[in-house]
Length: 143
Image (cartoon, rainbow, N blue to C red; front, side, top):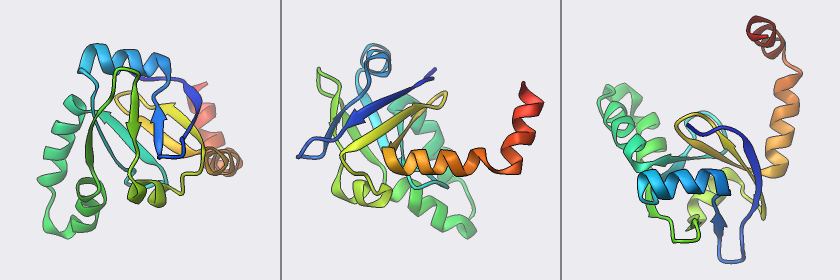
């Protein structure tokens, strides 16, 4: 289970290091095998341990043809990656472009996957979402 957030950075070659707490789980429990793809609704990336991604991919593949765009967005952009011993991975240029990733990133634990955001874009998104009526209603229900 992934929870929490961390500030990270992309290097000049487009590599990033997975935050320590997440990295330990990915290396120890999943052998460093991950899948990186586009988020289905947001302008960010999602990183799944490959063992979590494979059943998700099967569910997506079973969708009717009417959902071809969703399939393309998730499966067509998916990249299998093996983290190195230091927990680093290369983020492809096409995925960096999709998510508008600059040098500064925010990595968020979301249960069985991680989200990777451009840091400035995430803060803008979070501020907008926090101001919405839905956010306040949901917070009242949960808290």
